[in-house]
Length: 199
Image (cartoon, rainbow, N blue to C red; front, side, top):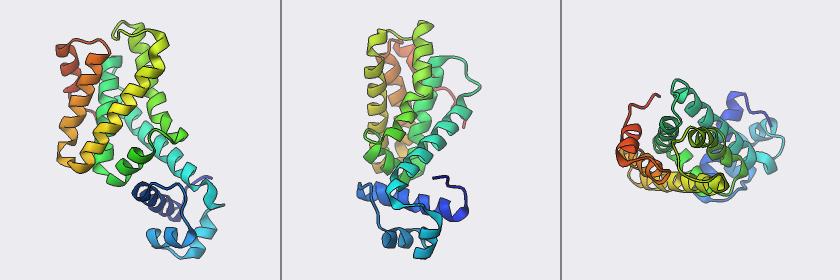
């Protein structure tokens, strides 16, 4: 399902909010129309079917977040700096948009499409960092490391939904701790985790 029109974007946004608030992956036309502020006919005219709506929302969110992070870190060469910045940006984006934060919190581990957030650029930076000697973990543990990073980041997102004013600091703290766990010294991790964030 290709979402491009203003009505489709409005519907997707309403669906994201409903999914995140309720924790369910299904909605009906009536509640979606009410949440989007459109008539039921608009839903029927803009969606092929509701069955694929959750996946469409998850795919779009993962693509948007990944594109924002990739654009922000494009000028950074060092993989540890890229990883730290990516973690911080994911936390900030989720804190600035609580509907996004709640959606990631509820479905970040279970929705296959959202795994792209953790297995796209972050995975490439992990591999690059390991190859360049930044990280100290065996290749066989790569999946465990990705799960560790995603779990820590989602945990920080959960805390910033409760205290959004701490998002920037919490993101830096998480990035620092993750880099230390990957093998950087405290000073190296702190410098990278607290560097200016390109947005």
